[in-house]
Length: 66
Image (cartoon, rainbow, N blue to C red; front, side):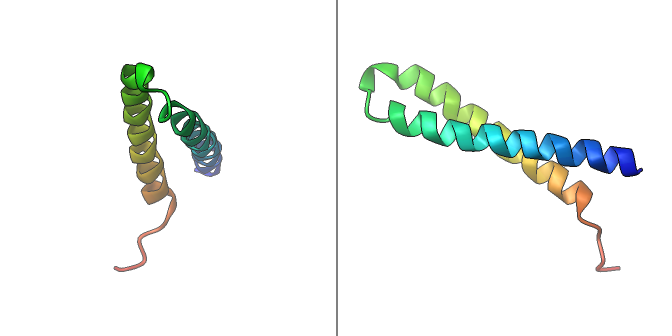
């Protein structure tokens, strides 16, 4: 279980890093109207990363409500 958690933490770190990098790229492309398709694809990828980050976080945080 520990190695699974470590692998998930490593993946989470990678996803958060890519998500931050996309913020920078998207901010630059916003000012270039010729790159709207690329901008759309990057925003879609960013949303996919956010979903995967959320999924991993819910697996790593124990459910203490019960």
